[in-house]
Length: 132
Image (cartoon, helix red, strand yellow):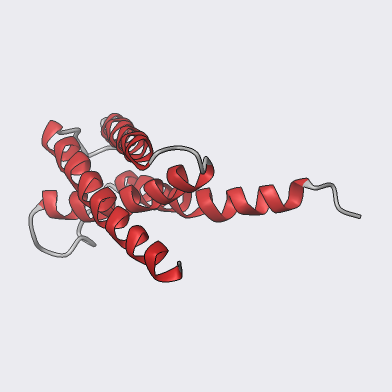
């Protein structure tokens, strides 16, 4: 017996599970007081890379959740969500011993999210054209 909700629920999980899990990874990493696990390189690069993935995953979720939503609206929603999450992460870091919030980290989060949204949008468009 099917309630009719399982396919929609499974679809939402398929769409929103990856960005939620990735956001959880970011939260876990920013909860760490010991950051020696981070390989060398500038801090902004790591922020940018983590948030680029989040941006692409958020774009996928926003653009697929409401099929009638135009691509620019999905991109704006993804960028807004990622940037707000980055801001909340900086607030979270203010509560973690030996971690400090930094507006430059938030800027790197927003820039990385933007790069991920642009790259993800190009990839998703190419895949859609290939499938058509």
